[in-house]
Amino acid sequence: MNFVHPPNKQDYYTQVWELVQQIPYGKVATYGQIAQLIPCPEGIEAQEYQASASRWVGTALAACPKDIPWQRVINSQGRISQRPDGGYQRERLLAEGVVFIKERISLPEYQWHGPGQASHPVQGSLF
DNA sequence: CGCTTGACCGGAA
DNA sequence: ATTCCGGCCAAGC
Image: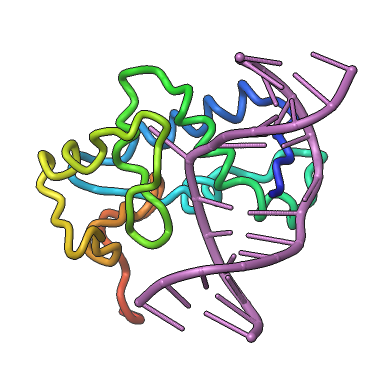
């Protein structure tokens, strides 16, 4: 397993938390998505970053403050990742109205579109 | 001091 | 659809 750590661990974790905090109620994001929203730290090869970042996100959430909606971060398959505590992530999401189909969430429907992203997606060329 | 163990992901078979 | 693989560090026991 690749476990390259970010140069400034604390700093990176903070960025993760900031982003996760922005995920709206009833929406979800994937580990990889959060990772991509954070710029590759200096001194890290883009390739290494791609290979490791999603895990950094997971590790960051493992140590996140209690006011962070960690339950809204799921894996790329739309599933709940195994956690040390066995947890109630699924329950929390259900409580937010997220629908599970065969233990899986429909990402197209529930995935958060990012922080700066448009609340009004520009579809097609309006011209 | 050494061994174990991580909230992941995408591609290939 | 499912399983396997590479990625190769550091904190904790």
